[in-house]
Amino acid sequence: MAKITKQSENFSKWYTDVILEADLADYGPVKGTMVIKPYGYSLWDNVKNILNNMIEETGHENAYFPLFIPKSFLEKEAKHVEGFAKECAVVTHSKLVSEDGVLTVDPSSKLEEEIIVRPTSETIIWHMFKKWVTSYRDLPIKINQWANVVRWEMRTRLFLRTSEFLWQEGHTAHATKEEAIKETLMIVDMYQSLFEDHLAIPTMIGRKSNMERFAGADETYSIETMMRDKKALQAGTSHYLGTNFGTAFDVKFQSKENKEQPVFASSWGVSTRMIGALIMVHGDDKGLKIPPRIAPHQVVIIPINPKNEDKEKFDNFVDTAHNMLKDSNIRCSIDDSNNSPGFKFNNWELKGAPLRIDIGLKEFQSGNVTVCRRDTGEKLEMSINTLDTLTSTLEEIQKGMYDSANNFLQENTFELYDYNEFKKLLSKENCFIKAYWDGSDISELKVKEQTKATIRCILEDVNDPNLKCIFSGEPAKHLVVFAKAY
Image 1 (cartoon, one colour):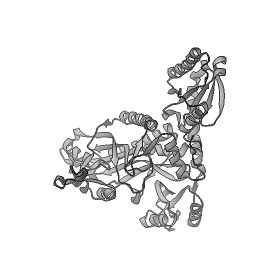
Image 2 (cartoon, rainbow, N blue to C red):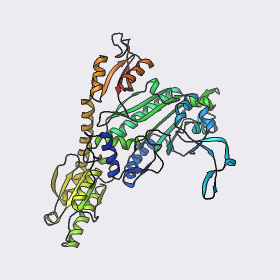
Image 3 (cartoon, rainbow, N blue to C red):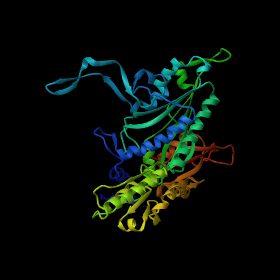
Image 4 (cartoon, rainbow, N blue to C red):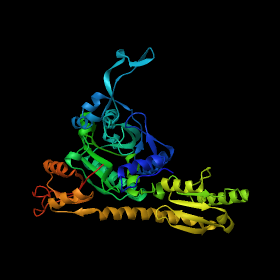
């Protein structure tokens, strides 16, 4: 087995080691791209399916929009184009020619209008909404898209920040501001449920500051999570777009009173970055720890019979255990590879399977099996006839993983009122700091320059003259969370 760097020695190296050695992903041939391997994709698929059910249950429909966007579309919304201009991949020609075996761009194939490879889809979707919306009867429109997007990142890291990544992006159009804001907040609650109930990741939720807001949004709400190195990771966002994109694309509707009205909007998304969060919240020096509700294999059976003694009966015993688990709706697999038992034990520990069942000749003869928990390392013997009770064990593991991560978050979150203490603490370690802020860009910028900490989200607004900004000493407007972040 390959050696994994310890978290305490180099957390960044540990993270990459785990991804590569656990067969989640590998580097693509173009700098900044990623190949998601089958085990990593099955993990993404499980999360995707859970979230897709949530999205459909809240009245949204899946659709698909083109990867290519005319450059002029981005130019219609000034803040939007400014926010994404430095990350856009641009298509300028449509043809290659071969000269003596060397491929070059055919200058005669220059496009009349340059094309942007989708960094996000607000512009092309609102171009289509212009066609679809004329009356109040056409609203609301609640669309979701599962897609890939391209953002030409300079500094990349597997799952967390790649030039191309997978995500879902929701886009909705509404007749009123209140309805669009309600949608935006409903999605935040949905994401919180996904992270806390399924990924076992505790969250902090709030509005983004002006400097951190999505380009083109009136308000952005974010899901903030704490990694094991105590840095923050923005794991998902939901944006109230006001009438910005509706106005830019001249989308209006006739009300019941036959008056022309503007259309209000939201957009929201989470991506394969969730897998990065999962790794860094739950992983340890042995590798991954995957919450049972999203694990590709909730239970892995390791048969140990190197000399094939009583092979037929032994194999039937293993199959019986496997079938009993499947009948209990437990995702399980048998590792019957030619690797040694020791390799298999280490491999599934690295891959984070919640439970492992070892079946050797002793187990076969006694009718009991050895069950090993990935979360605690505990081993227990149980009768093959009671394997259906592992459903409750898996739920116990799920809850325990959330509680452990939540305790870690609470233990490393502080509320401070003095800026010197603030700077001193952040100079020693990463953490979350709740503090009051005056709402000004300059205070936020100065804190970032001096400590590298940013406002992760605004927890609540305040209106008390006795509460002062931790940086400026001016009257505070908001309680926020500061942290260093990915």
